[in-house]
Image 1 (cartoon, helix red, strand yellow):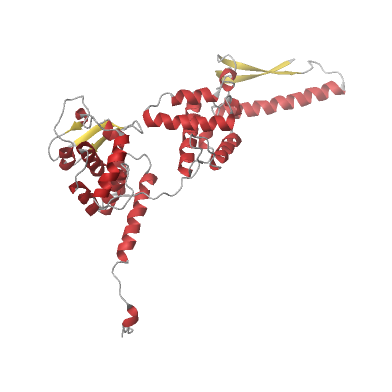
Image 2: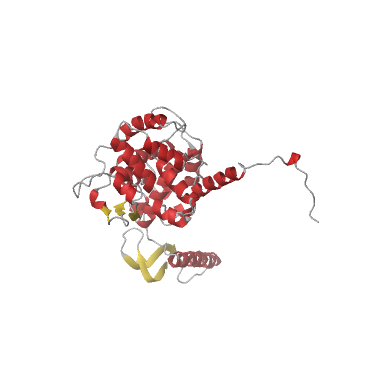
Length: 364
């Protein structure tokens, strides 16, 4: 006698994908057992079937039962990972390519979805933490690079779960790699003003840099900024755009000064800064900073740090600053709070007294 489960409501079959109520267990019992051996066989088989039934009921309740056909479980996760990479462009694409290189070095050219579990993910994280050196310059990768590569891996796992290549949302079960504390260079208000007053070899780069410091926009967003995205009127200007990094649609209020620095308004669909290239920015920026007698290593991204730090130092609410920067998590913005707190501590220690020269008496 063949045993099977009668499942209601019906679920997709693990192989065919068709909705079905029956799952044959390939377990058999004697219809009329005659010997003690046959009776014991029936008893143990029914106990096994009852155990399978209980587990299946839990899986159905957890919405995990038979949702992933074997054809998906046995397919190559790496191809799925690479397909997500191919949707990227620019510097983001290059970063994804590097992430794929390190994953291949760890796992090889073929990893089935069936192989991916918590242990696999933890071992990959441990591999990245060893800071392997695979790039052209054979330099060990830094901690925050490890974080970046692992985030892309876990993002791919989340997408695989959504598309029903995985039974479970494994990315939610594993620990990420903690980023290292980094020093974020920025300009004080007087330094920013001094830079603005200093001639620059490229007027486009000068204006774009100051706009970044006044808005917190990334280089990628400054470079792709169109005149059609500059909306409003004097005293109420705003930028309506899609962030290049996060692909989120945002509305960013901007000052009249920032809009004035953008120059004469061009055609609707033309870039605000048409001749901006990162290689030229790096070359020009270092000379400009030096000419302004600022002894800091300032990159274009430091203007974003400048915006965030000065906003918080002036008392702007952290949630407002977080929204203006386009951060998805308030924890990201908290980094700048630490900078401001450190500045306040340093400022508090600026005014000093030599109490050894003072006679201090107890109050009466």
